Image (cartoon, rainbow, N blue to C red; front, side):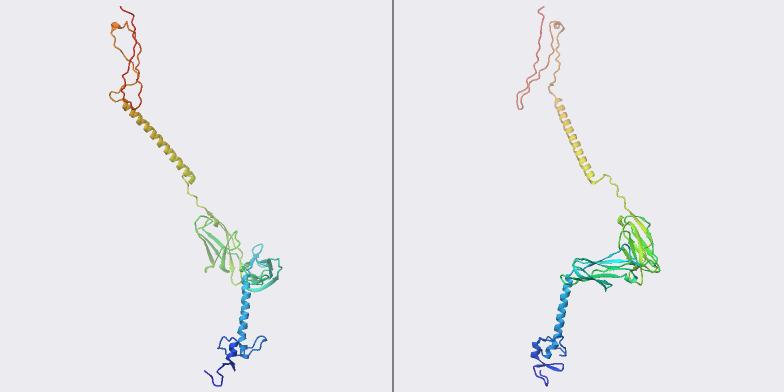
Length: 379
């Protein structure tokens, strides 16, 4: 629809009517533009109509955004550094601390950040892979979190910040906390142990330390009476050791009290149940030996039983009626007294008939007795 006083091929943009052909030639993306008064941020090599100048600002923003995304992607490609804290002992006010930033790649420079704020910068050689930052005369405000970041050489770009490292500082002007252990010292394995730490005046949060561990093993907020209760559940011999407490001083940084007195926990292992038959291997050997012995006894009993049965059958066959005795016996002849002088007697033996092969149907011959009789002659 045409507007009065305007050409049907023009659009109202501010105080100027822009030709639609000009807008189209400038790749106009929105018809809701209120003004054409945006100036070009750079000198154009090509003469543009006034309506095109208002369209160049979004294009420049897009270019800047694109370059920023490229830089961000390069930064994401760089691996993050790591930061470590080095001190001979626990850090106290007035001590010197060394922070080391470990670089995974060669860097042009390394920066140290203090609670997210820039603190110092160090130029690097290409051969160096560690940047050291020394903090001398530690003060209360130095007890904060630190991070490091580096500028890479190949590929170029800025890495992300390292994981934060906490600088815990001890202020010996504050009294150490008290500590108690329940039950006392020697406990059986599997018991629950309670350690209490207290300081009614300064304690904001309590920390439980165990000898041999560089960092606290637990932390606890105190109750209204200024006492924190730590519980060790189902303790094992690995929980044996020396325990101490400290507390964080309220109102300032990462400032802590000195360590208090210690308590010693000794966990007694439960005695193993006695083994009646020794180890499992010995039990197996004993079982096999017992089975072998039982088998041998059974074999012997069966053999003796078979022999007894065979002997019994033999005896029964010998005692049957009509059975002929095969054993040699003496044969006694009845001789009249009148003939006793004219006879000579000899010992006679029964001759056992020869055996016949199995299956032969011949009947055994009666035994034959041989005798020799001698006389003195007729009377």
